[in-house]
Structures are given as structure tokens and as C-alpha cells.
Length: 261
View 1 (tube, rainbow, N blue to C red):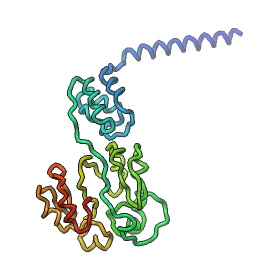
View 2: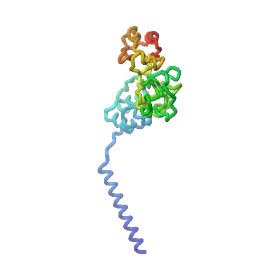
View 3: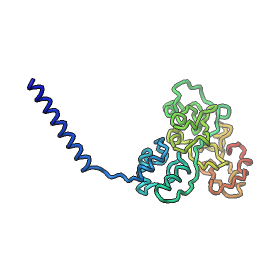
């Protein structure tokens, strides 16, 4: 009986010692947190998508509190969240350009040529290990296996007729689909952009026409006819400068392959 009492006392004393030690350590090594950081974190949406470039909402909140990130750094929260964070930080929240993801390909099942029937694993990243990088004749086109769909936390992108399409209103520009696409087909563009080049092929015109009916052939008609000098052609592929583009629609009208949408 005395052994049990002794063991109980020993355990109690050890527990008390550990408790006191941890309590003192917590006070001595406590890291002071800026109250603004906690306030900012409470305002952020909590998606932890990483679209801001920081490791989750807590990382962004800490950066904003330290002045290392802009108050409008959350692409998911948008202007409303930016305004609230601006109030916390005592600064005005400048309206940033709303961005959305865009898939630079319109070579769907009817438009793109197929070299062979594929019946393996439906995973875009795995296509690097199959003949020709996938069944589509165009080595730059969307594979349509949905790696971007799986990566999107907002259900804003879906594969339709063999090509991924983005729902502009659902997209939060978190960048996850951009990272997930092994073909680098997806980029963030201004929400207001109404003229977009839906192709990523850098092949010469004749090769593009063999692979896809709607691929850019680098003919430069869009560039030559653009009244605002907003289009360049590099590596046989047209590119639009959205800051210069006036949305006149001339490039879309002149494009012989209807690549500009």
C-alpha cells in the first residue's frame, strides 16, 4: 500500500514540476503577435489556396501586418476583403485588376486531330510517358484529362468536349490550375479581357494545320490590322498586350483560323 502511495506522490510531483517548467518556458519564450495580424487573419476567407504567394492565409496575414504584402493581396477575397484589411492597417486599399484563369487552347474533339486511341490512365501529367505525349496530334494542346479540374478548389474549371474551360465568375485566380497543367496552357488574364488567343502552339503554320483546325498559324494578319499595336507574333504565335488592347474586335475578324476568341 505504501508503494502505491509513494508512486502516486512521485507522479504528482513530477507532473507539477513539468507543468511549472512548461508554464515558465511559455512565458519566457513567448513570441508577441501583432494584434493586427490576428485581425487580418479573421477577415481573410480561409481557403489557404496559396494564390497570394504565401503559405496559406496565416502567412499572408503575417506579411500584411509586417508591411511585406499589399492589403489587396488575397485574390479570393477581392475588393471587399481588401477594403476590410485596409481599415485594419489604416491604409486605403487600391483596387487591383481582377484576374481569371484562361486555357490557351480550343482544340476540342472536333477540331484537333488524333493520332491514336488512348485507353490508359486519365492523368495529364502521365501523358509525358506515353507515345507522342498523348493521343492529340498537337503537342501543345489541352489533353483534357482534368488535372486542372482536380486542382481547382472552387469548381471553376471543367473539361468540355476534350478541352478545359474556365467559369470566369467562379474563378478566384488562385493559380492552382496554372501550376497543375503540365502543358503550361493556363495563364491568368484580366477579367475584362475580351480578346484572347486560344492557342499555345509554337509550330510553323503548315504543321499547325495538320494537327488542329483552329490553331494559330502565325500569319500575322491580326498584328498587321490591329489599330492599337496591341499584338505581337513570337515563335509563330500571336500574343495580345491587354493594356494596349481597346477591344475593337478587328483581330478576331481578321484571324483566318478563328483562333482569337
